Each structure stands twice: as structure tokens, then as C-alpha cells.
Image (cartoon, rainbow, N blue to C red; front, side):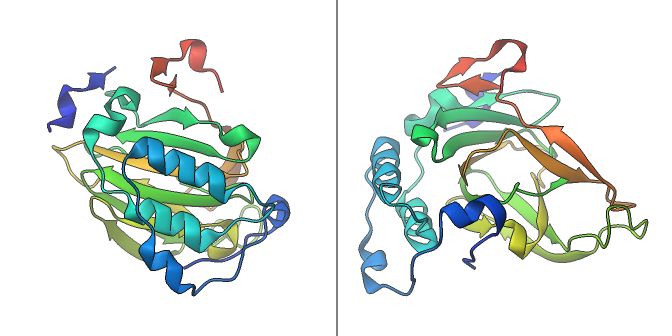
Length: 223
């Protein structure tokens, strides 16, 4: 399936807000038996996983990993913009999480950013992405630039996880010709984050908005 034919317009507990959702114990053999039929089944299983007051990082990761991506399941949510990557809301998670599709045109990338003390899960649905991780800068404006600590290629169906205790990151589409699509889950949801100047480490607050909700384009870039 050529996605360009669509609409083109290591587990750890974080701190702060994420303490409301502590992590459950890991290393459970039953996680190897998780199966997911389609995107609707994935959403149902994620909702069930959030029935408790804790975030089971390994279970959520296993559910995402068990889903074998199929564009027929998520095509209606995939909205591209030729000038920037887009965030497209799929499910609000009853206020506990946001599930969204991010659509990346060729060579599009995020800024270096934090996750506002939230858990962040990501699965590549189409194409390839690259994650670059960074240390937190020392002080609010160190002037020394951001220190990269790792680069991870993420192929189709690849899954990764980050929270603020693990550092900052930037995600990019390394291809100069092919688009990419990824599925992201944030818990708890947030409406703003910090972005960082790569040369100086200077942070600034940035609102995060949705390009579309439930497959329909949002007017005036609503949050």
C-alpha cells in the first residue's frame, strides 16, 4: 500500500505527574502470549490495561509490539502536511492517555523535546524513523549545546519507550523520498512540552496541537 496516496494536506518510571501511574512489575512470561487482531482490538486492549491506577509499561509495549501494522486499519487517521509532521488524535483514553498517529513527510523531524513527566510509547506503522536521545542540559541555559547519547533506527513495527528520567529525544524521518507513520501513546495526556535549542540547550515552552481528530481535520489547530 502506497501511503502517499492518503490524505496529504527500557522501561522506567518517570517522575512528577507519572507518579500517579506507577509502573507494575515486569518480566512476566504471559506477555509473550499477547495477540492483537487489528487497530480496534489494540485500542480495546490498551483501555483494559488502563483500568487500574498504574501503568504497566511492559504490557503496553507488548500490546503495541503484537500489532502487525496494516494501513487498512489506520488509513483514515493518516493526515499529512507538506511543511511539517502532524499529530492526529485517534483515542482520548477516557482522560488517562492520548493515542495518536504522527505522519512524517520525507526528511521531517521533531524538535528536541521532553514529555512533561509523562510516559511515551511509540510504534512505527509505515516507513522508518530514527530516534536521537539527548541528556538534559545543565541549568536552564547552559550555552554548551545538547549532548546526544544515542541514535536508534526504528523500522516498520518497531516499538520504543521514553520518559523524562531517561532523557530527551528527537524523532525524524531519515528518508528524503518516503513518508512514515507512527503510533504514539502518552500517559497522562499533556497540552504543552519543553523544546530545546540544540546549539545552546535553552528550553522554551511549546503548546502541542492536533492536526486532526478521529480522522477529521481540525480547524484553527485546536488542542
